[in-house]
Length: 262
Ligand SMILES: Nc1ncnc2c1ncn2[C@@H]1O[C@H](COP(=O)(O)OP(=O)(O)OP(=O)(O)O)[C@@H](O)[C@H]1O
Image (tube, rainbow, N blue to C red):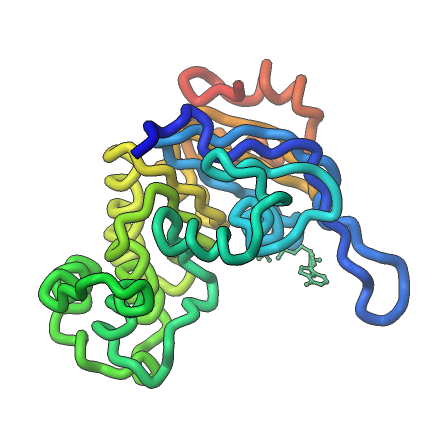
């Protein structure tokens, strides 16, 4: 296996414009983002609702095609990758925890967790799936149909499904959105452990306490990256979001070390 490169994702001059639904002006959701996301670290993306966080995540993950710019994902230029190769990357190296969970409603929690292995024709370890579900606080729920699980339970099954494939890179869109504080801490702890184990985690979140567990925090506003913070506290992230100042000002003044902007 080739050793991991220090950069998991390289984003160059990324823009994304959506056509307007009502025939009006197109919407520029991402407006020129250049950044690199390091391997083996946890990166959180924060910013006001509608600033483009999920769109950025989907572009980074190869699930949304950029309007302009280039994304290099685990060493692959996404614009040159055929859909089958993207599918292979997902099968072998990437996991995505969707905001909408994307479970198969008619399958049990356990069958959802082992589904990627079944689809890939790999051996299935039901006991390991149950252990993961128990770790997510879903002990005894493995036989329950996904459609009968609460939102918070579905969210944790979705994470267990990703963990089951032990991916090199995990994307998570609001992974604690439906969870109470205790369960959110469990989920975040698991994502943190992944990064501590040299996996790459990229998470979109509204929760600044969750973001403060990340090694790097990207602050977005109006389709732009406005700050990059290293190991910031929740308060320093809040300050940066509130400051609405240009990046240069923010990086010198708003965030004290060690939570300073890069
Ligand atoms: N497929 C699409 N077609 C048209 N507009 C879209 C599409 N997807 C997203 N948008 C628009 O792009 C903007 C950014 O959406 P996005 O979901 O990326 O923001 P966000 O920061 O993740 O928001 P939130 O925090 O509320 O989830 C929004 O105005 C949204 O309506």
